Image 1 (tube, one colour):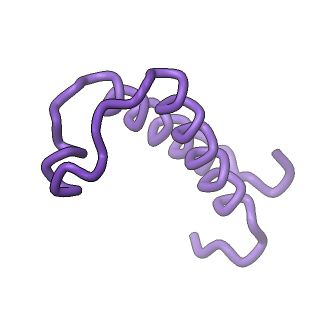
Image 2 (image 1 turned 45 degrees about the vertical axis):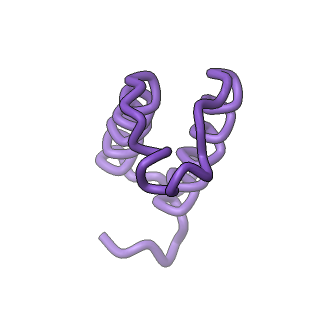
Length: 68
């Protein structure tokens, strides 16, 4: 990705992997934190939302005004 420093690419990758691992381990945390408003979702929906989130974060890391 243009503008993405190698170190930020590594950080973005590690954050994306961490998000995926947390989502795949059903803990019930989302239900507890949302007072039951968020329940279990299909894996495809979880992954789609996580991909959008991670992609936006990586794009932000590549932005010219991103602090080091």
